Amino acid sequence: MKIRVYTFFFTVLFMGSQSLYSRILPVGVGKTYATVTAAAQQAVAGDTILCYDASINGGMYIENLKGNQNQWIYLRAAQAGATRIQGGSNAIQFTDAAYLQIEGFVISGQTGNGLNMDDGGSYSTPSHNLRLVNCTFENINATGNNDLLKLSGIDSFVITGCTFRNGATGGSGIDMVGCHFGIIEKCNFSNLGSNSIQAKGGTADLIISRNVFTNGGARALNLGGSTGLSFFRPIDAKYEAARIRVIANVISGSEAPVAFVGCTEVVVSNNTLLFPGKWVARILQETVDPTRFVPCGNNLFFNNLIIVDQRVSTEVNIGPNTAPETFSFQHNMWYKTTQPSWSGPQLPGIKVNNWVADPLIQADSLYVLEATSPAIAKGLSYGNEVVKDISGKAFFSMPTLGAWEAKTVTTQSKEEAAESPVLIYPNPCQNQVVIQKSGTALKSIRVYDVAGKGADIDGLIWGGMKKFYLSQCLNLQELVVLLF
Image (cartoon, rainbow, N blue to C red; front, side, top):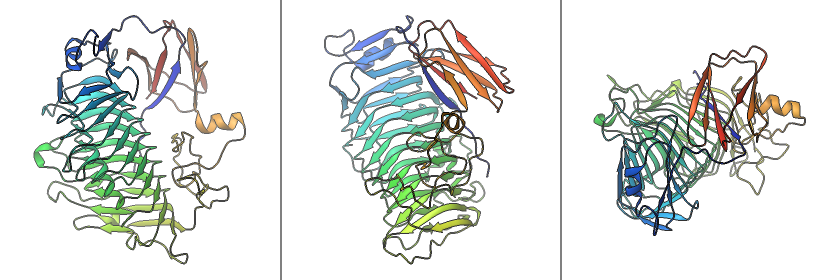
């Protein structure tokens, strides 16, 4: 199975004041704008809508809030975590948004979905380039198929540093229909209903990485699902989900941590799965039409660390109309705490090096291993790709199994080789920065400042060790460097 390499992000901090071309639109009692929607009607590319009130009533609708690739629009809480959008059917429904970052809000008490972002039903023109940063979604006031975060027809998005807890019994933490090219990272999910994350309806090309799930629903990760045919994006998709990478997560509890449901080319690697209630994984096909949909198959499960107890008697539940023989289970470590003489899991498909041993997780941790753990240096290599563990450390060429890389580097030169094939310095800087790369050639670089203003730098061929200088930095506070 081909493993795709996605864009890498680097951040460089600059000393100095914020650039002058952005506006602050203050919202709250005694501020210029009384409501978020009033500010949104006036916002243009580069603006920041800054919310000061401790509580904002939900039930807002905002359409066509769009920045551009050079200047994003920011919707921020003036003090992260201190502004709560409370109640309403949805906190806010965003339709046809683009180049928008939402940051620092607490969203709670909705009777429908907590936050809803969609393409307005115009499937050929998705909402795109959206970021959700350090938000909390909690305590939904619903019990049915209601989601803390509902995404429909969203492309090129990032959800990072967010918390999802206390969801509806029949809903998800994040529910995606027809979403593409997304990253969900460094989030926490707890006490959810059906799922923590559901990706269905033609959803593809996601990275789900470095998250922690605690009792995250019946299926913590529902990779696929069941979608009405008219809601698929693209409309002729032949799968519920495809090309999703689930890397370096910790999943504790749930009836099944991972469910492959009508999906293909999905990779689940270097995760730590702890004490599921019934199964470790499920292989299902809920949308059945052999003339259109491929059967659930061609998925890869490797470098994972799995601990179960007496509640698991069938490790992998297999439903009808699937292709379990096309799955691959390689270089995983399994341990059953209630049966020391356990002979190991019964697995379908290709099976290589599925060890049975106590991985020796430290008593006060969900994932940190003892120095003598048999899981160290047992994993399949990611080749030249830099893949980070749950703590942000790069996995070695022979990775530790599970979400945490146990090996540490002992010298600066080894650390740079293992974790930083791209060097960016000095950081912070005042008026120039060096981007230094050896080995693999890169097609292009794109740089952005803190407000989203950016420029492409194409045609770079590294060949050995080259340096590129960015000058006249205009006293920016932050620069984001994207390598393609």
